[in-house]
Length: 61
Image 1 (cartoon, helix red, strand yellow):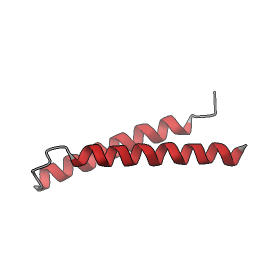
Image 2 (image 1 turned 135 degrees about the horizontal axis):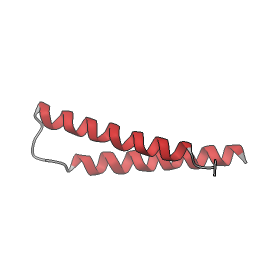
Image 3 (image 1 turned 180 degrees about the vertical axis):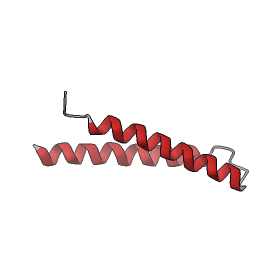
Image 4 (image 1 turned 90 degrees about the vertical axis):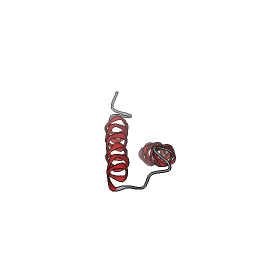
C-alpha cells in the first residue's frame, strides 16, 4: 500500500511539473529576455511548491 501511495504522489507531481512547464513555455512566448525567464522560473517554483505541499498531505486525511 505504501508503494502505491508513493507512486501516486510521484505521478501527480510529475504531471503537475509537465503541465506547468508546458503552460509556462507559452507565457510571453516571443520573449526570451532575462526578466521573462526570471518570471517563468518563479512561477514554476510557486506552482511546484503548492503542488508538493498538497501532495504531502495526500493520504493523511
